[in-house]
Length: 229
Image (cartoon, rainbow, N blue to C red):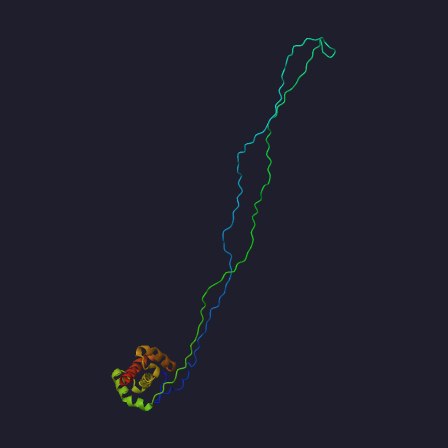
Protein backbone atom coordinates (compact mmCIF):
# COMPACT_ATOMS: atom_id res chain seq x y z
CA UNK A 1 0.00 0.00 0.00
CA UNK A 2 1.30 3.41 -0.96
CA UNK A 3 -0.63 5.39 1.60
CA UNK A 4 -2.11 4.66 5.03
CA UNK A 5 -5.17 6.00 6.79
CA UNK A 6 -4.95 7.38 10.29
CA UNK A 7 -7.22 6.07 13.00
CA UNK A 8 -9.87 8.70 12.33
CA UNK A 9 -10.35 7.43 8.78
CA UNK A 10 -8.77 10.50 7.11
CA UNK A 11 -6.34 9.81 4.26
CA UNK A 12 -2.81 11.20 4.20
CA UNK A 13 -1.43 13.63 1.60
CA UNK A 14 -0.10 12.17 -1.70
CA UNK A 15 3.44 10.84 -1.48
CA UNK A 16 6.14 12.54 -3.53
CA UNK A 17 6.08 11.39 -7.15
CA UNK A 18 2.54 9.94 -6.87
CA UNK A 19 0.11 10.83 -9.67
CA UNK A 20 -2.40 13.43 -8.47
CA UNK A 21 -4.04 14.29 -11.76
CA UNK A 22 -5.89 12.22 -14.38
CA UNK A 23 -6.95 13.33 -17.84
CA UNK A 24 -10.02 11.92 -19.57
CA UNK A 25 -10.22 12.81 -23.28
CA UNK A 26 -13.62 13.98 -24.50
CA UNK A 27 -14.09 12.78 -28.07
CA UNK A 28 -16.75 13.64 -30.59
CA UNK A 29 -17.40 12.36 -34.11
CA UNK A 30 -18.12 14.86 -36.86
CA UNK A 31 -19.93 14.07 -40.09
CA UNK A 32 -17.88 14.60 -43.24
CA UNK A 33 -19.66 14.05 -46.58
CA UNK A 34 -17.66 13.93 -49.80
CA UNK A 35 -18.73 13.24 -53.38
CA UNK A 36 -17.40 10.85 -56.01
CA UNK A 37 -18.38 10.08 -59.58
CA UNK A 38 -19.75 6.59 -60.21
CA UNK A 39 -20.73 4.85 -63.46
CA UNK A 40 -24.53 4.80 -63.74
CA UNK A 41 -24.67 3.27 -67.25
CA UNK A 42 -25.71 5.34 -70.28
CA UNK A 43 -27.34 5.31 -73.73
CA UNK A 44 -25.84 3.58 -76.78
CA UNK A 45 -27.24 4.71 -80.14
CA UNK A 46 -26.64 2.45 -83.18
CA UNK A 47 -27.71 3.37 -86.74
CA UNK A 48 -28.58 0.38 -89.00
CA UNK A 49 -29.56 0.29 -92.69
CA UNK A 50 -32.83 -1.58 -93.22
CA UNK A 51 -34.32 -2.43 -96.64
CA UNK A 52 -38.07 -2.38 -97.12
CA UNK A 53 -39.78 -3.67 -100.30
CA UNK A 54 -41.97 -1.07 -102.05
CA UNK A 55 -44.59 -1.74 -104.80
CA UNK A 56 -45.58 1.09 -107.15
CA UNK A 57 -47.88 1.11 -110.22
CA UNK A 58 -46.99 3.37 -113.21
CA UNK A 59 -48.87 3.98 -116.52
CA UNK A 60 -46.66 3.68 -119.64
CA UNK A 61 -47.45 4.93 -123.18
CA UNK A 62 -46.49 3.01 -126.32
CA UNK A 63 -46.69 4.04 -130.03
CA UNK A 64 -47.68 1.58 -132.73
CA UNK A 65 -47.39 2.06 -136.53
CA UNK A 66 -50.03 0.39 -138.63
CA UNK A 67 -50.18 0.07 -142.42
CA UNK A 68 -53.59 0.24 -144.03
CA UNK A 69 -54.44 -0.21 -147.71
CA UNK A 70 -57.63 1.45 -148.95
CA UNK A 71 -59.00 0.79 -152.39
CA UNK A 72 -59.75 3.99 -154.35
CA UNK A 73 -60.68 4.84 -157.91
CA UNK A 74 -59.98 8.44 -158.95
CA UNK A 75 -57.84 10.33 -161.42
CA UNK A 76 -54.24 11.24 -160.50
CA UNK A 77 -54.01 14.73 -159.11
CA UNK A 78 -50.99 17.03 -159.18
CA UNK A 79 -50.43 16.35 -155.53
CA UNK A 80 -50.08 12.68 -156.11
CA UNK A 81 -46.58 11.36 -156.54
CA UNK A 82 -46.87 9.38 -159.61
CA UNK A 83 -44.33 7.20 -161.16
CA UNK A 84 -41.55 8.14 -158.82
CA UNK A 85 -39.79 6.16 -156.13
CA UNK A 86 -40.91 7.26 -152.69
CA UNK A 87 -39.50 6.13 -149.36
CA UNK A 88 -40.29 7.33 -145.85
CA UNK A 89 -40.07 5.92 -142.35
CA UNK A 90 -42.37 6.25 -139.36
CA UNK A 91 -40.93 5.19 -136.02
CA UNK A 92 -42.62 3.71 -132.98
CA UNK A 93 -41.93 5.05 -129.48
CA UNK A 94 -42.71 3.47 -126.13
CA UNK A 95 -42.31 4.61 -122.50
CA UNK A 96 -40.28 2.53 -120.08
CA UNK A 97 -40.07 3.08 -116.34
CA UNK A 98 -36.92 4.79 -115.14
CA UNK A 99 -36.36 4.16 -111.43
CA UNK A 100 -34.19 6.50 -109.36
CA UNK A 101 -33.76 6.89 -105.63
CA UNK A 102 -33.48 10.11 -103.71
CA UNK A 103 -32.34 10.10 -100.09
CA UNK A 104 -34.15 12.57 -97.89
CA UNK A 105 -33.70 13.37 -94.19
CA UNK A 106 -37.01 12.74 -92.49
CA UNK A 107 -35.96 12.74 -88.80
CA UNK A 108 -32.98 13.54 -86.60
CA UNK A 109 -31.90 11.69 -83.48
CA UNK A 110 -30.08 14.07 -81.18
CA UNK A 111 -28.02 12.51 -78.37
CA UNK A 112 -26.77 14.92 -75.73
CA UNK A 113 -25.87 14.81 -72.06
CA UNK A 114 -27.22 17.21 -69.48
CA UNK A 115 -26.45 17.73 -65.80
CA UNK A 116 -29.06 17.92 -63.04
CA UNK A 117 -28.76 18.22 -59.30
CA UNK A 118 -30.64 16.33 -56.61
CA UNK A 119 -30.73 16.47 -52.85
CA UNK A 120 -30.11 13.33 -50.80
CA UNK A 121 -30.50 13.07 -47.04
CA UNK A 122 -27.67 11.41 -45.15
CA UNK A 123 -28.68 9.52 -42.00
CA UNK A 124 -25.82 8.58 -39.68
CA UNK A 125 -25.15 8.17 -35.99
CA UNK A 126 -22.34 10.18 -34.47
CA UNK A 127 -20.69 9.21 -31.22
CA UNK A 128 -19.30 11.46 -28.54
CA UNK A 129 -17.92 10.97 -25.08
CA UNK A 130 -19.81 12.10 -22.03
CA UNK A 131 -18.22 12.20 -18.63
CA UNK A 132 -20.51 11.93 -15.63
CA UNK A 133 -18.85 13.53 -12.64
CA UNK A 134 -20.30 12.41 -9.33
CA UNK A 135 -19.11 13.86 -6.10
CA UNK A 136 -18.79 11.14 -3.51
CA UNK A 137 -19.38 11.98 0.07
CA UNK A 138 -16.42 11.21 2.33
CA UNK A 139 -16.66 8.09 4.47
CA UNK A 140 -16.82 9.19 8.07
CA UNK A 141 -17.64 6.90 10.95
CA UNK A 142 -16.92 7.13 14.62
CA UNK A 143 -13.39 6.15 15.55
CA UNK A 144 -14.61 4.79 18.86
CA UNK A 145 -17.04 2.47 17.10
CA UNK A 146 -14.26 1.18 14.88
CA UNK A 147 -11.96 0.66 17.86
CA UNK A 148 -14.64 -1.52 19.43
CA UNK A 149 -14.12 -3.97 16.58
CA UNK A 150 -10.40 -3.36 16.24
CA UNK A 151 -9.54 -6.46 18.24
CA UNK A 152 -11.86 -8.56 16.10
CA UNK A 153 -10.20 -7.30 12.92
CA UNK A 154 -6.74 -7.97 14.32
CA UNK A 155 -7.68 -11.54 15.12
CA UNK A 156 -9.09 -11.94 11.62
CA UNK A 157 -5.82 -10.64 10.17
CA UNK A 158 -3.78 -13.06 12.25
CA UNK A 159 -5.78 -16.01 10.95
CA UNK A 160 -5.77 -14.89 7.33
CA UNK A 161 -2.14 -13.73 7.15
CA UNK A 162 -0.41 -15.99 9.64
CA UNK A 163 2.17 -17.05 7.04
CA UNK A 164 3.03 -13.49 6.06
CA UNK A 165 5.54 -11.18 7.66
CA UNK A 166 3.27 -8.16 7.34
CA UNK A 167 1.68 -6.60 10.42
CA UNK A 168 -1.90 -5.77 11.25
CA UNK A 169 -1.02 -2.05 11.28
CA UNK A 170 -0.23 -2.28 7.57
CA UNK A 171 -3.67 -3.71 6.85
CA UNK A 172 -5.57 -1.72 9.45
CA UNK A 173 -6.53 1.04 6.92
CA UNK A 174 -8.08 -1.66 4.70
CA UNK A 175 -10.19 -2.99 7.59
CA UNK A 176 -11.19 0.56 8.41
CA UNK A 177 -12.14 1.13 4.77
CA UNK A 178 -14.39 -1.97 4.72
CA UNK A 179 -15.88 -0.93 8.06
CA UNK A 180 -16.69 2.54 6.71
CA UNK A 181 -18.19 1.12 3.49
CA UNK A 182 -20.60 -1.05 5.49
CA UNK A 183 -21.92 2.07 7.22
CA UNK A 184 -22.63 4.08 4.07
CA UNK A 185 -26.35 4.59 3.53
CA UNK A 186 -26.24 3.96 -0.22
CA UNK A 187 -24.77 0.49 0.34
CA UNK A 188 -26.99 -0.71 3.16
CA UNK A 189 -29.37 -2.62 0.88
CA UNK A 190 -26.65 -4.00 -1.42
CA UNK A 191 -24.48 -7.09 -1.28
CA UNK A 192 -20.72 -7.17 -1.68
CA UNK A 193 -20.90 -8.29 -5.32
CA UNK A 194 -22.57 -5.03 -6.34
CA UNK A 195 -20.45 -2.85 -4.07
CA UNK A 196 -16.98 -4.24 -4.86
CA UNK A 197 -16.48 -2.28 -8.08
CA UNK A 198 -17.24 1.03 -6.36
CA UNK A 199 -15.07 0.00 -3.42
CA UNK A 200 -12.10 -0.75 -5.67
CA UNK A 201 -12.45 2.54 -7.51
CA UNK A 202 -12.68 4.51 -4.29
CA UNK A 203 -9.72 2.69 -2.68
CA UNK A 204 -7.40 2.98 -5.68
CA UNK A 205 -8.13 6.64 -6.05
CA UNK A 206 -6.02 7.09 -2.90
CA UNK A 207 -3.92 3.90 -3.10
CA UNK A 208 -3.42 3.08 -6.78
CA UNK A 209 -2.44 -0.47 -7.67
CA UNK A 210 -2.95 -1.99 -4.20
CA UNK A 211 -6.52 -3.29 -4.36
CA UNK A 212 -5.42 -6.84 -5.09
CA UNK A 213 -3.52 -6.96 -1.79
CA UNK A 214 -6.24 -5.56 0.47
CA UNK A 215 -9.56 -6.56 -1.12
CA UNK A 216 -9.95 -9.68 1.08
CA UNK A 217 -9.40 -7.63 4.23
CA UNK A 218 -11.90 -5.01 3.07
CA UNK A 219 -14.42 -7.72 2.25
CA UNK A 220 -14.07 -9.44 5.62
CA UNK A 221 -14.47 -6.12 7.47
CA UNK A 222 -17.60 -5.50 5.40
CA UNK A 223 -19.01 -8.93 6.28
CA UNK A 224 -18.16 -8.47 9.96
CA UNK A 225 -20.02 -5.17 10.18
CA UNK A 226 -22.98 -6.36 8.11
CA UNK A 227 -23.29 -9.51 10.18
CA UNK A 228 -23.07 -7.51 13.37
CA UNK A 229 -25.69 -5.10 12.08
